[in-house]
Length: 314
Image 1: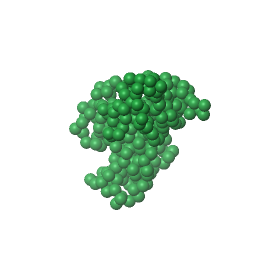
Image 2: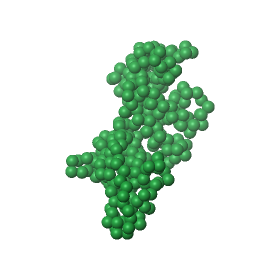
Image 3: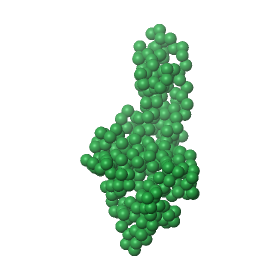
Image 4: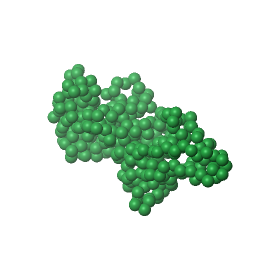
């Protein structure tokens, strides 16, 4: 006899109003916390799912974890939609329980083992100024990415993970991994896979960010003094390329080409990346450089990822 289960997940900060997305109904409990209740079934009470992570894991645990990942993906889609990333927190507030326990007993099923005691799952969510359904509609427009193993979600997982990483150096390393994946995929779509990293960065920014969007990003960065910091760091490549000086020439122009400035600022970040990845602790002011590089890179990646998800790159 099949076992019918019910489990409730609590998600924070959650949604602003109840809504249903596919199999998931997001609702607000009496304390205004966002919850999702899921029902599912297993073949038997002692079933082991073929996708379990260890031999002691029963099917209800495996299935609950699969639902957590699916809910996480919905929240990641919203992050891409909003161009805003922060940690997600998903907990199992009501552990799985049998809806048909009495029927199973009457049928002779022995319910002897304990139900798995789920621990808190910290996975990461986003501010909820927009509805999940809006984000999902937006996301479905990106069918061109399906051949790239769901690139948008893959990159967004790096961005989400970055928000809870310890220290600016580690956060920059993770952020760069996301950016590296992004510009590699974009260059591949454009038939530029043989180009070096610097050219792929230039191609990606030029193809995914408009001049007006670049102006908005540079204006924000100027308010944070990020561009000035990149210039003052005097970043030079191992081959003598004066990245900071080249940035200064265009950034301080009376009529700057904002897209060009953004590309040259990204090249400075590329120089910092080489220092941090190759020299590590030997880099002077490594924390400062990682902080400045992350300030530049974060809005660029968010904008590029959003555009990848809404623009036909074919």
